[in-house]
Amino acid sequence: MITPLDIENKKFGKQMMNGYNVDEVDEFLDEITVDYEKLYKENTELKRNADSLTADMGKYKSIENTLQNTLIMAQTAADEVKNTAKQQADQIIKDAEMTARTRVDELNNQIMLKEKELADITKQLDVYKAKAESLLISQLEILKDINKDE
Image (cartoon, rainbow, N blue to C red; front, side):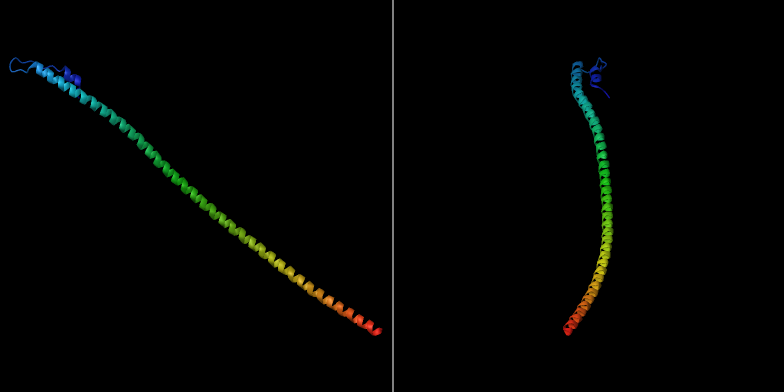
């Protein structure tokens, strides 16, 4: 690419006849050099900005990829926590049901024992009543016999 310095240092051969006016050519070259220098600097600056923006875009793409990976890992971790919590909840429910069944069985056994004790005590009470009635009858007989003897 031609630089502004190349334009400024360019020399033309001179012709004797029908040649160009040297002052006009130099003046025109000076104008072109100034404009071309502005454009050259602007182009260089734009290239630097484009390179910088490309580098920044690469950084941002890397950050975006990192964020996407982080989000995926967070989602995976959340799913694992959710699944673990569900498994723990299911196990707690299963343990609670097992404990409840065991407790119900124990209580049913205790009820059966208490009912048996009640039946035994009821029988003992019936036997006691029968003995007490028998005793009272025999005492009444004795009193009757005593009253007859008198």
